[in-house]
Amino acid sequence: MDSMPPGDVWVRRMREGDEAAFTQLYRQYHPALYLYLLRYCKIPSLAEDLVHDVFLKLWEVRERIDPAQSFTGYLYRIARNHVFKTIQRIATDEALRAQVCRNLESRADTLPEDQVADKQYERLFEEALDRMPPQRLRVFRLCRQEGRSYEEAADMLGISRNAVKKHMVLGMRFIYEYVHRYGDVLALGYLLVHLF
Image 1 (cartoon, rainbow, N blue to C red):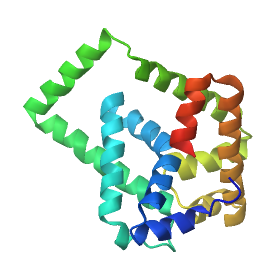
Image 2 (cartoon, rainbow, N blue to C red):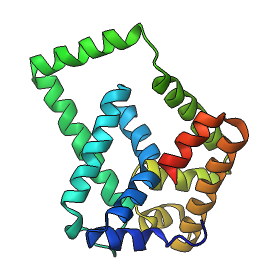
Image 3 (cartoon, rainbow, N blue to C red):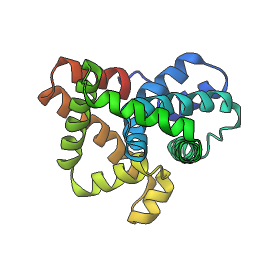
Image 4 (cartoon, one colour):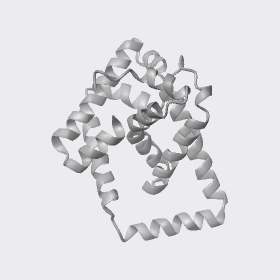
């Protein structure tokens, strides 16, 4: 892990069309973005589709990303805008609304392995968050779940940008170690593929 370049290097590489860098960013941001979108739409399959849409949009506009600005904030702004547009489209399109309702009804009777793994991962993720030191949790929630930049979080919390960055690194490490310690192989595999 130490040999990996920092996140801003991945962003720069992605801007230049490096698909491996894009894949790395996808793996890093997918789990938290999925949970963020799931809180809005409440449908796991729709949240997963939205994540894919957000990353597709990110790839399409990659050349417009300003590496001097917060990548996380940019990504979460795209996600928030996309989920709001999708929910609005569902609310105003009767056929789409009926399709979503049918999807919800069909999922109520079955619980595929993917849903079980997602639920286990989400439970472990929330448990890890509950065990984080308060300041680290505030930083994580601001940056990862609300899409604030490191600068915005630093201003809001009255700490330095470097302190915010350190809290994020330690928070991600803590989540990984928690899932490794308390989760089964499936949850750990899910975390490794999607978070790191």
